[in-house]
Amino acid sequence: VRYALTPQASAYATLNPDFATIEADQEEINLTRFELSLTEKRQFFLEGQELFNQRIQTFYSRRIGDISGGAKMLGKQGAWSFAALSTQGDLEESVNGANYTVARLRRDVASRSNIGFLLANRSHDGRNQGSAEVDANLFFTDTFGFTGQFVKSYGAYDRGTVAFFARPSYDSATAH
Image (cartoon, rainbow, N blue to C red; front, side, top):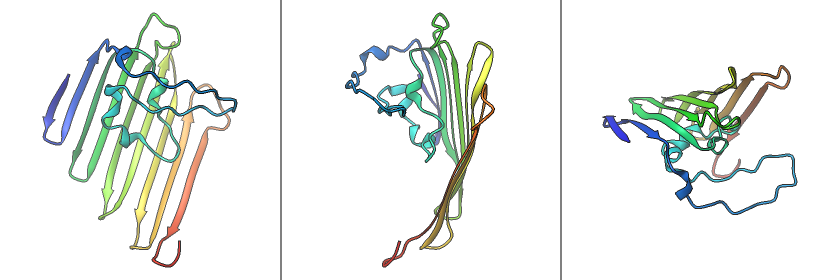
């Protein structure tokens, strides 16, 4: 179900969606310690997905298995863009019975820059784990800019819970 709240904002809801109708992924063998990144094909997760994409990926919708229900809200109001998604996995399944919630707020600054905040949480068996992040894409002039992200995770682990990315840039017709 999709409902247009305003011309720039929409709410979505789904109940017991049948993801079996989606084209199957081609099988890949992974012999590395890094997770494979598969393309999202499920319609409920596709619209608004670009708002959750950052350099350090804190939300990956393919980790969410079959769901019994979900809700999503996407929109833009002036300089603000927002996206929120919450899904409930099948409660009878021990692994997929988790609740996933992710929210993103982004503010356009000046003509080409933006600053954003993202919170992603997974709740399972009364435990919460996830991450909070702040990111910025700033362009000070036509040639000088900065892209950065700071992520703090929380949950069962107390070490290695911070990540960051910083990239100043200079782009002109003759140099990068």
